[in-house]
Amino acid sequence: MRIVFVNLHGNEFLVKTLNKYIFKQSVAIKHKYILDYLLSRDDIEICSFINHRGLSLSYSTRNRFLQSFRFLEHRIALKKNGIPLNKIKVLKSEDEIKHDDLIILYQLFGPQLDFKQRPDAFIALSQLHFTVSQAKVMEKLDPDLMYNESDMQKRFIAFNEYFGWFHKQYLVIPFVFADRFKVKKPFNERQNKAVSVGTVTYPDYLIKYYGHNCLQPARKQVYDNAKELTPWVDCFNSDYLEDVKDSKYSVNDNKLVRIFKRLHDKFFVGHQKKYYSFDMVEKFNDYKMCIVGEEIIGLPGIGFVEGMACGCAYIGQTIGYYEDYGLKEGVHYIGYDGSLDDLKAKISYYQQPEHQKELETIAKNGCEYVRSHFNGKAAAESLLNNLLDAQQRWLDSHPIDGN
Image (tube, rainbow, N blue to C red; front, side, top):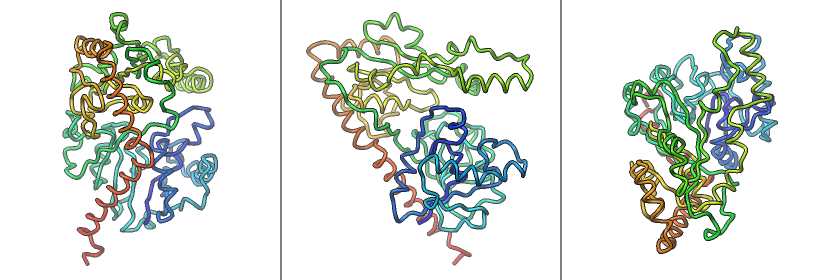
């Protein structure tokens, strides 16, 4: 069985890329658990097709001389990630891709989608960090399956505008918590209120569909009303616009100055210093409840899984997001209607002495469910099984040469 990635060494969702090492940047390798699981399987051959845009240090360049270093970058990146070179088979030509290969692509990295012609193989495409920027390229590539941590086909109101051509399987996979997220403090020793975490960001493409560009309005609601919510919620959210309002960038800067400022930020500054200054694991373990406001396009934040893995009773909106993962309101999490009044009412209810046992039971149920279903091995195994089932159906309907 062969699984083919494209420019694996430059996929920061699977490995720590060379530019992250050079600029000494910390990074959450969100799908590392998938690669780790595949590497543990002796019956799977992992391949990396390094295409003509494989130099991740400069994806935008098509300069042949610079791109000639892409294979060296691959070797260095694998070595730094502790992956033996013999564990990854390098494909240098599209012709080396076989009909029965399972190709996994990531939408966010446009150069991965750059094929001379669509490979005659099953293509699964991850929409992690959902974006519409590659919609036309994706339509030409015509993936056989798409997957994400939420069903964007159902949740994002503008999905059909960009991806209306896609009528195949859309797979929902769970968020996966990192090993460091664990229960460290007994429930009865925690503060009897909720902690709210997560960044508020503002992508402009949202204005067209929602009349504003706030991606996480539930987080902003808590952030803007932090003082009012003090009896029920301690707010540790970060508003990205507030964090960068004193940025040195100017529209009048020439290209060289902008490059210098970016390098300066990478090495010496970095945004959201305050937000990243506290230990999230310790913070979750300080509270009985947690809130991680959802994204308006149809995604919860990964923090909901991390908080539950630390033993918090999670508070989320009752809009169907969590049921997609098998969670049940009142059993695994506390539901509210998205308003401040209902948020305060629900927290106040569970703060009462007579409801503490009920609160602890919800926290325990949620923690057990997340730890058994949303750990790396379980999630990766489930994903692979679903991909292989879908690939087999594709192979059955796409015999080689029509035979």
